[in-house]
Image 1 (cartoon, rainbow over the protein chains, first blue to last red):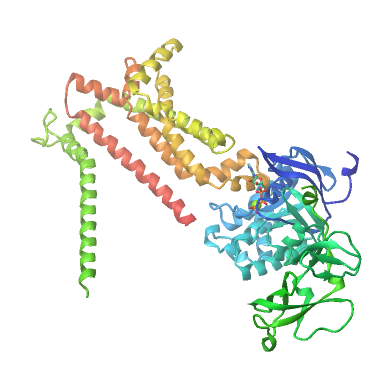
Image 2 (image 1 turned 90 degrees about the vertical axis):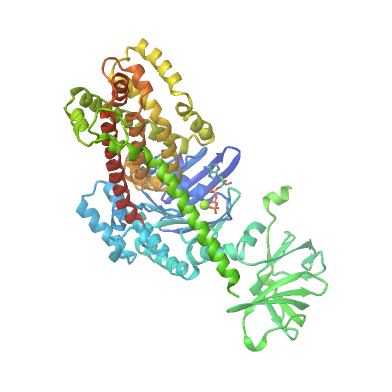
Length: 361
Length: 272
Ligand SMILES: Nc1ncnc2c1ncn2[C@@H]1O[C@H](COP(=O)(O)OP(=O)(O)OP(=O)(O)O)[C@@H](O)[C@H]1O
Ligand SMILES: [Mg+2]
């Protein structure tokens, strides 16, 4: 195994895992750099937890190899891997106090009680829970329990930190503050972190890179920007953010949809599909002026006010229905069945490759 | 206007009254034997008669001064403790197995494990007798303890599988991820959390063995466990000693239950 030796924090090579007849993971290849915050994003049942448990050593792969900081760990037991993990439901020990919970990994590493207590207190202080050491987990709120689980996972200075949908049970406000907190902790410890979520917004906010996983395969790996603006498949495009996907036939001028719209693009492509993000469509009363744009006329089908934004569904005359998102402006909102002009810059009509699976079908 | 409402209230009141009356009736039915046994044990005469003509503590004296009664009691305690330890240890392993790796077989295995409860005790005793006589275990206290272990296992298994099914196994996984071995994780994390199940299982196992007569009759020789001694006692001469012994047994069990309850309460309040 020559190329397992490198400086990446984690390297997975053609990892496969089946449970009976379910292919939970099919040929996963993934490399995570030291100090990186990588998010695994995918719908429910896509294999996220299985992948994380496999990295942690609770699940053995059917085939493939796994290396942590250049060392082959495919068959190493969980305890030997020095990985801190936060479980989906925290998995705190209810019969131990908060401090004892955080001391547990240190005790297992034969630290003296005193040293363990000191380190655990410091870890609790880092998540602002130093005053709660004597309590039992059940006496804490969900967010506080989450932070205890985090402190317990980092107190022994693990090589990797794994987080399995840690915020899914928290309300929105708490989730946002926990996101910031985890990011800060991760950055201050320079800890390589693998984070699981099915919340695309959370993935975009937190990650250095995102791996989009679906049906046990990594569909795309890239920075949040790349994933958002250059999705490599329909699955990815639809999973991240809102999207208008227009299909049709390629003509020399651009893509002609089956409904008859012509979309010119900045660069030619043969994919037969175009992705237009809702916020890339300008909506105006009068036809917009300016070159290099696609112009359409249409009628407002519906309007949804979502705080900072307004989302319109617009029926393009002789064309598809497009979702348009624009900054809310109380003075100039459009009403249902009002006639509007849409303009889309050529550069914002992004080609989307065919899904490998769709092409085969 | 308030008429339908008050009628509703009245019927609710009535049904609640009936329900509590019924509960008391059942309770009375359950404790009636105790209410009879206690007075008889303090009888002054030498017959089992209720209510007694006179009162004394002579039957308690008989019990405490008779070497054979004390021997039988100690033997029963020894057999009970050994059967409890064995059945809880084996039952715990079995329950771990069927709540984990063996999931697809667990339903079947769980039912098979209840067999000793279903087989008539006389059939079980006869077969144990023939098996143990080949093995030279008849007439030994550990023979009885082994046979009792099998009888205790179903109770232990029912209680422990129920307890383990509620336990979040991710906690054990987490402990292992944090550097514990499987054994340490079970000891430090799993066992403390199913402690109340373990205590109830042990309690039930002990009672099952302590109270068991048929197997003990077949497998003991000259000596006998407490139930056998009581049985022999009423065959030879009926006197209120067995009532005194029964009362002592009841007191012991109440004390043990009380202690168990307290132990669980301490834990429950911490986890609340
Ligand atoms: N122990 C197991 N035995 C059998 N099948 C399993 C087991 N664990 C997972 N699976 C199956 O593998 C697939 C992937 O499961 P996994 O838990 O990894 O999904 P997930 O992406 O974490 O989903 P969620 O977002 O709902 O947590 C699912 O089809 C699941 O049913
Ligand atoms: Mg999951």
